[in-house]
Image (cartoon, rainbow, N blue to C red; front, side, top):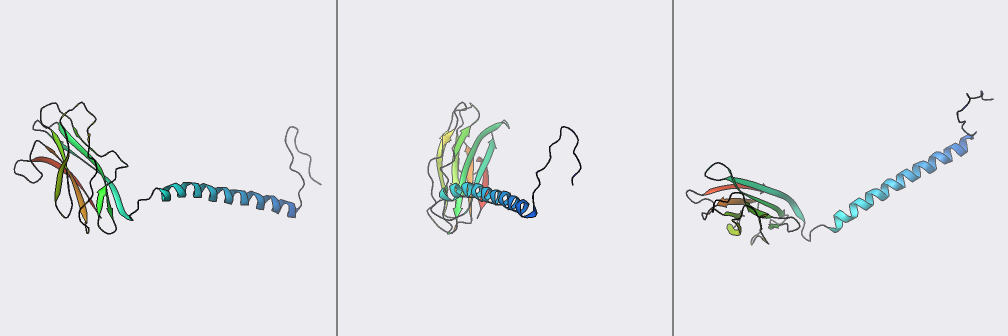
Amino acid sequence: MRPTPPTGTQTLPDLDDRELMMRIRTACTGVVLGTALALATFAVPAQAAAPARAAAGCETLRATVANSQGLSGGTVQATVCIYSGGSADLNTSYYNYVQDHQADGVAARAYIRDSWGLYGPLAVDDTSTSGGQDLGYWDSTTTGNTSVRVYVCLGTKYPGDSGARCASDVMYA
């Protein structure tokens, strides 16, 4: 016989071992099924949104170049994907842009380099008050890319030109 509990407390019902085990089993089954359902709910959208090509990796690249006064002159941001076969492109699900930061009459231009060569300018922004210019669509014309580099340059010079004021970021496959 159980001792009498203090006043104001609840007592547990008398359960035999079999009934107690059934309740524990039912609770555990509910937890396992609920967890499985939650995992399936989160996994399905990610699989459905996968690109048609198998991605070796995607990365958001960002570079900012200083102007001649040492101030922030322009920024490029681009989400680049390199696929298992070495083809590459801009992931247009993201906002890929070049943005000018100073109203100094010197435009910011965006370029991309893959193993085939340099492309661009993809976009030009010369308005420090705008939200930047979209880079549009870019798809590598070759396979076998092991890296892709994005550049932002001020003025009309290309990356690698003498006196070019550029900054870059790179991703490797």
